[in-house]
Each structure stands twice: as C-alpha cells, then as structure tokens.
Length: 294
Ligand SMILES: [Cu+2]
Image 1 (tube, rainbow, N blue to C red):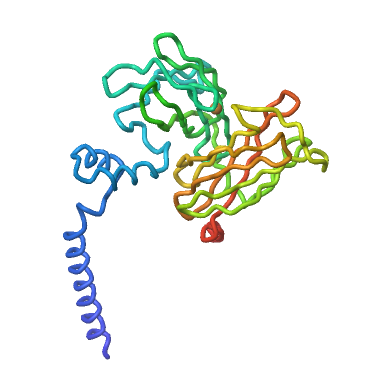
Image 2: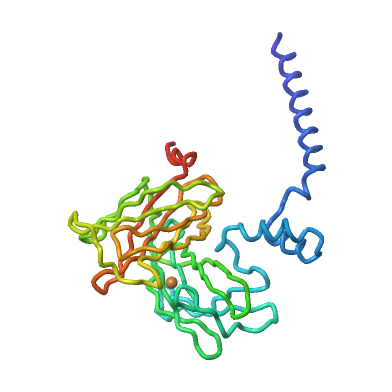
C-alpha cells in the first residue's frame, strides 16, 4: 500500500472507532456510573433496595465528606502560622450538629490523620464538647493532610467520613514505599503474615517480638490486643478491619476486607509497657505486587 492509501485507511479506522465509542457511550453512559451518592438516591426510591444496600455496605469508607445525610465540617485547623487546635463537627440529616455518639472500640470517634503521601500517620481521639464540637491539638506536617473520622452517631449508621487539609511549608513528597511485611519500632519487631484477597475477608496475623523474643504480655488497647487500620494506596480508602479473639501476644489476628487489587498500607497500634507504638506495613494483593515497577 502507498502511504496516502495507508493514511486514508487509518483515518477511516479512527472514524469507525470514534463512532463505535460514541454508540457505546450513548447506551451505557448514564447507567454505568453507580457512584455512591447515586446508589443512595436509588435506594430511596424503594425499588432496588436489596442490591443497592449491599453495594453501599461494601463500599470503602473515608472517601466522602458527606454520606447518608451526615457531613463532616472543619471549623478551624492548625496551619503554618498558628498552632490552634483542629476543631470539627458532624451535621446530621435533621440539619443539626450530632451531639451523642456510640462507643465503638471504646471511643466515640477515631480520627486517623495521614499525610496524602502517607509519610506521616497518627490515630487520635479528639475531645467532644457538650454541644458537639470535636477538638484536638495536632502537629501537622506540610503538604495535604487527610482526616478520616470513624464514628457512629447514636441511633445512626456506622460512618467513615474524610476531608483534606492543606498545610503550608516546605514540602518534598515521599517516594513510593517498598513492600514491607516486617516493621521495626524501637526494640520491637512486628511481622505480618496472610494475604489480602480482593472481595474477601482476609485473615492477617501480626506477630510481635522484642529483641528476638516473643512478646506475650501485650496490653489491651481500644478493647483488643492491637488496633489495625488499613488504607488503600492511591485514594486512602479506609478498610474494614475486625480484631479476632486472641491472647496477649505474640500473635494478634485480624480480618481485613480489601475492596480491590492494589497496595495497602497497614498500621498496627499496640500497647506494651504502658506505651502505644505504631508498626507500619506495605502489602500488595497478588495482582498489585508490581504496582511500582516502572
Ligand atoms: Cu481510635
């Protein structure tokens, strides 16, 4: 074939691809976007309740600032020029500030504070004022900080809401972290075994040793012998993790629900000798293993 003929053929093929894509878009476009908010709207219509309830129940938390009528609102935050406390509130579907919360894992609200590049992590418990305003002093590093609040309003749904805070200052993004199934915290080593399987409840076991010796006198922390938080790399989706019954170490078992292939950051808070320490892990699903090769 001559070059002009090739070119015409190529252009024709392009047109065909374009027309087909448009056709497919026209057919599936509006239907194929089951965002979480749409799922809730559809649920309200009553017709497809069961299927959509199920989808919503399995959607990862922490990605939205507002869910099921509840909205997280930051009132003030520390910044480069002031160290005022972080203050925030939650508004309910009745238009009022939520003032009463259920205790879950011994606290009315758990707040995870992470830099968007996952270079810093903190799990804290703000104070609740009588009129429903949360506050806590935070030392934030420069960059974009993600706040993830895990709570259950009295007589409300279990919720995980998230919002971003921009913090000024010199900022150098952290490079992607390599896969890490062991973590060293001071004189402690913590190993992680188990595979994360998308769509399944995956058993994960953490084993705590100190100077090579198994630690068998872990102390209860938030109602268990360890508190595990798992975040998905890329969007910081907050996963459901349930502690399993266990003794005081060295093994601390959990069930983690992973929504998709990818790499996950796991943070174990454990208490020993009266001190809470955090061990950090980077765990890919099987197909997520090569995520950062290029
Ligand atoms: Cu907590």
